[in-house]
Length: 376
Image: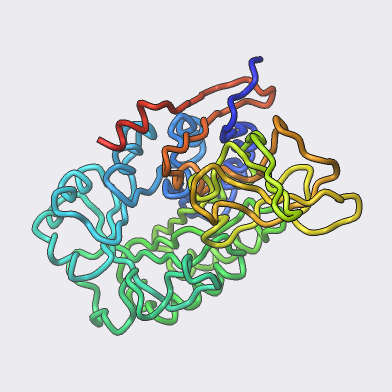
């Protein structure tokens, strides 16, 4: 087997399948529908594998909707914070379920969806979230994502079929239970009259310590209370949690006033923006993010771009690093490839899907032509 390129996002198909099996079991046991959110993972060569376990996927843009239609082979669920007029007709033609962010937009597009087979919903904000990082918390009562309770009429508008709620982020089963109770308390009168409820993403059911049985019990209770509701979850991270890594190479070592920085052939701002935005401290194989016994060699990790802040603070290694060493960042399948940029013309890492023996099932590499096509 030839060596994998550097840098490369490597997706392990056997681990992905294991996650999908668990998710499919949760859906079956609880009587709900669980679909893939493309905003977290959109590597379409893996869609045939994913489609063996999931009935559909959800899109937040026309491009994502097209990708689902072409490579997943199913009608997508669609939600966008706002629909460009030039895109709406095509998005509506592709979608099965379509959610508006506001009631005003629902009414604006009514002539285009009323009388069609499209099942239309509106996003609501229950003003609850366990997320403490503002960048990832959509539940602010003054925010832009969804209608708060005072904005809703007593009865659902004509033709409204569903509610969409999304306020979790890599959250546990207890947070899902609280979200449902908050939703019932605020919007229970709507739940009695509509056909479906989308509980959004952030349900990290494939994490090792997640209370899967607790989630199933919560969802079954919701189904028993509202047996007429079609209930959907659309996690992103859960599907590809711990299924992929980003491998890279040490290109140089900079030493200034005793601080050593490993210069890598990847960029944190370009390829792993959550490490700077959240901030998220990734696990680095063979190193410790904190001082620890046996880890006597501290290095900062430097990215390829010219952004001064394109680095991670010190990791501690067991032995001195050398130019040419391979470094591996774990759990890099979700919210990485979909957020990556070519800022500074930094090359995009390859994306590779491998089987349990390391054989390449699919590979996408990026060249100057890809960069040039983005710029003109």
